[in-house]
Length: 347
Length: 169
Image (cartoon, rainbow over all chains, first blue to last red; front, side, top):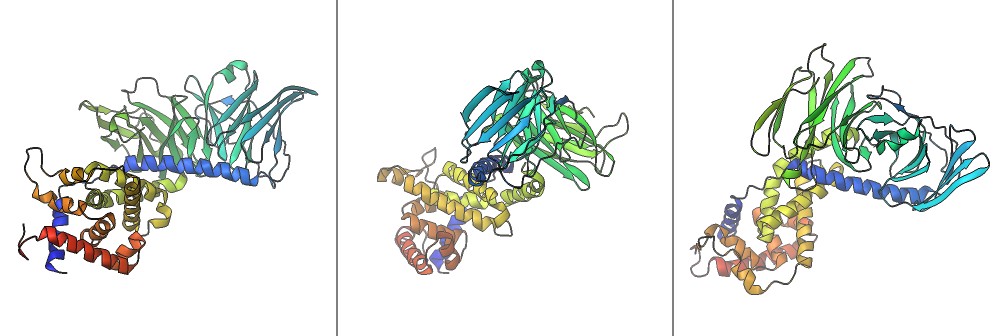
């Protein structure tokens, strides 16, 4: 290099040495996940439009939901794998001679729902499907038809009181769109459905208005996830076996909210999970685990790069502690006003 | 969350962001002359790198992110509103107390170069890329890089060493 080039290099370094340049990885990850999700949804719509060509009708049974919290592992309903993709599918109802027929157009932009009881058509309605949105239609006091913009491996209803209910009825997966009929045991049950939450085929937990949460996996133990449903104002904890728990968030964003879920892993061992959400604006915290075999993870969600809107999800997973024991000894965090707080989550 | 690949992917990407973001931000600052804009460009470049992470993480994350960053800055430059030339001349010439900050002199000089020459100079002399690597980053020929370097250095020389060769201003 010439003297000028050497001096130029040195001065360029000198001009930038006062710039810290550190970025918050969580904020980048959050934005990246959102964009990835948007791409996924866009791809799903395109895929549905591409594959809705060949017709095959498969009838699927639907059973009433069974409120459960947490739901036992292994209650996930089977997803049929059609050999060809129908444009119309018929869902028999538990009501005598009742059925719902659902048709999606080839471009996946419109849906038609027909409710038939006996020989009488009680409802025939067409609607537009927009790209990434969930479409819901209550076709009678006990029955709702839902179209999800993804291929869902399980679906749960989030109730207005913040609890959850696994949808045990079968779903029909139509390319990358999932259609299911939620038939409640009572009118009150269906009135209480605030939101639906589902897990897509790559394991992501989603809902009508969901912030993507955190995932924690331990070798030999099924993967755990926590997500938050903003519509249902709930935290949803799941594992990849389909068991899940729902924790009401409450309205006070200054409070930490934590709960515990127990399940049995594939080897028959008891597994505990402590999951929850720290107060709004808390980004600095430490988690002290009680046992060496436990692990924890976090994901901080924000509507922008503004840290005051951040809420961090935490999930700790490990072998279930003995009665009276804890999985997490303490979580210490600093509030936005600078106050240090230590809590011991339940469980 | 994005399924079982997420914990590993997130951990890798988090480590990458921590290690690469200072250098990327400094590069962006030299390209733009604006710290806030530099931050915005790096954030966007890192998000795009995250989306492509499975394809780029095998040791070339920084190079990929830097390429994205440079391209974002080119797009920004194409979309930029017209700015009076004297505004560029005056920009950040002094600090809050009216003193001339010598450390920023080279940044101001870079701002006087045409965009392509500035990009080449920054990648070549700040990022220490070879002429071939600069050419790959910018999607231009090595000959174009050599030409831009030559013209850029000539322009800087007249400002950088305006009077006596070898004597700093």
